[in-house]
Amino acid sequence: MPEKFEILLNYIKDLSSETPDAETYLFVRDNLKSYNLNIDIISKAIKNNLIEVNTKLIFEDKNLSEKKSYFEIIYVSIVKFKKEIKDKKEMEKIILCDVQNKIYPKLESIFINLLKDSGFSGIKIEKKIDFDKLYNERFS
Image (tube, rainbow, N blue to C red; front, side):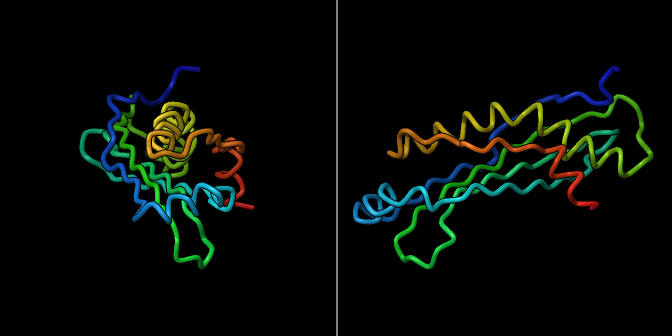
């Protein structure tokens, strides 16, 4: 089945690694297992069947500790639909599943390198994101 979209380009819109001081770094390094990965996907129409898809990954500690680091990336994909899609659900599924399945391996690699280059080596994202499952769970 031919794809209904094409990713014209991807780029990093924003990249952030915040660790305020050495004491915080040492604390975070020892407590990194309490950090969680969250994802947020926002899209907006540009023109002529073009959509800007912003995929944001945030890696943060939800605990109340004052010593925290914060990591975030916003990765933009410019997507062109190969034909006009009238059904909003079909378009939503393409944006939330199909596009994400294509870009996520590279996005995850960039994000892991950000953590590694920020001094937190050995980070692995153990749980792979199943975008189709997340999409389907929204309606159950």
